[in-house]
Length: 114
Length: 108
Image (tube, rainbow over all chains, first blue to last red; front, side):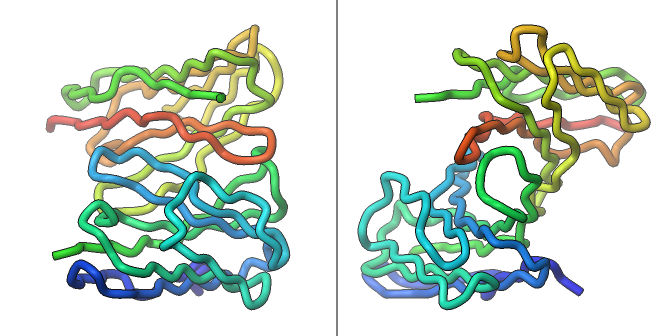
């Protein structure tokens, strides 16, 4: 059983389109995250939710909107996609918030903007 | 804000050689975690260190947390091709600040 699953695995789309990435975890964790990893492998946190509530919102364009319908799901919607949005987006979860909990990552969604 | 720098950025070693990556912070860290990301894969949690001067071992991997809790190291003894990947350190009190990563290539 996959602990943290993301869909789709690959996303190729045109500039200006709107797209969504979905994430689900079956670990019973309270906290979920979205990270962006660029071509240089830098891993940056974008958002974090704890039990459906937004607790971390980094400096991210408001074209990015996360949504957590329940604590097992965290989706990411991106409006008006730009070339610079091309990256790998990772979903992760941890038992609770804070930087002292091991995180479990999904396989990533590779987003390519044409 | 808190920053975590890792050196080196890249390292190529011959199989069987040792490898070390260092993680440095300008501020005192509450803890340090290490993750490994295989090429094309996702980060996988390896270990967490909390105490000043703490040393932990996992088979050929040795993790150390500095006395001042501002730096950490990961040492791999006698690298194997399976060690290939990017190693990240991370720390944070309320959110995770990931280091810049060290990409390790092991030449057979």
